[in-house]
Length: 292
Length: 337
Image (cartoon, rainbow over all chains, first blue to last red; front, top):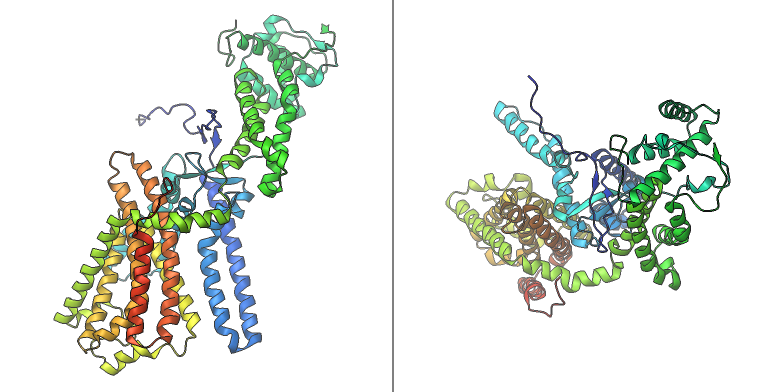
């Protein structure tokens, strides 16, 4: 018997979230996935480890050279330096204008307050102080030997489950919030830097255009148009040949041997047609919606 | 079948692009410059133009979403507006202004707003210290179950008064003072952060840490008092302990605040109440770490060089009074912290 599944609202799994600016426009931010977050953290951890090891070697070398007189000063530098590295790395980088540690920047992520306000020192501190609970507590558990007796082992396992709950917390909620994010009111979003692509319709106005019968333009809606846009922008020959053939077949048009030109013209004509209809209040979302 | 080339664009999106593309590109150039370098890299003209360009682009986005079918254009404007938004609204102030705000209002206000939790945490610490004291007095064997031997360093009920006194005034000859101070600071701060983070589990582990801390203190006090060294121990403890124990109490209080906010959110939703509590106690914790830095200096350097009891008492009390005044004396409040 199949387990009755709760129907999921469409788009619920998507990582896009509503984010309304004070001007009242929804920016539809895209959240970072758990995998990307973990990768960014690992990159940071590796960088921190490399810095720590390099600094330790450098200080040990200096101590060797300077003799015992400078030993205490170097120990102080090492102690304070490793404390600042462990606790300050994330806090200082996230408080800087970029809102991201080097690992996050590398993956194009950024820490953002969920209410759209600026990140405050308190929020960033709590977000990173919670890492003690989420990461270092589970790690310290791994270091402890489970006791000999069965009861000790049981307690160990239960405690480990409790601790793992904090570690895997981001997997249990829709917004991939760490406990730190939850308390600080932050989330981690993608910051993509795109360039403005060419205007597919406007680019070809100097050329003779094909004219399509109205029936051929009745075939598709906005969804198909934008899929066609992707095909044209990606420019893969194989896809263009296939798509052109299937549109010709459906519309009953003859093959004139110029697939690229045919698709560009068809895109432009369909775009103009759908845009005009949508201005008149009849936006056709996809091919299953009725044509006007 | 072909149509002659026409000058008029086929779709409005083309016309719209032609009209606004320069604005978008200027905004993009400015935002890229801020992202790569900083706001200070901008000239006056660009700085003044930024909000206007941002609002124009945002309105372009709205128009494009409603009228254009060009998905690439829509995606580009979304990304551009998001980047500009974060530079305009999301950027924190300059580091100096943030620091000034933290010391002037953020830190003391955050601590002051935790006063209820602070009282509870202090009561918990004091009660368990008294408990530890009487437990050990009643039966000295309790001492060994409260304080692990590696922490006691020979200070246990069987130790002679001479040994105990030696710890109080001996200093750490082998350890240079600054090293000792740095070690104490990093260790205590890490423990305090940990105690704070544990507050998330409804404050229970935080309470356990506070109780354990109090028991240890009480047990230690008892073995000194029973040898008639109580007043000397007081001086040894108070010079840094007034700051350190206060800081630990505050860390516990910050942890409690989070636990309480999640457990009993009141009228706000659980998430909202957690966020308010989290941000307040995060600021408080940054302050606690600084307090522990002061405590580390007092303990590592002050205590090892000052060996007169009255001076130790005077310094400890003065520092404690200073903290109280800084946190709780009424001050002018500039709006909400």
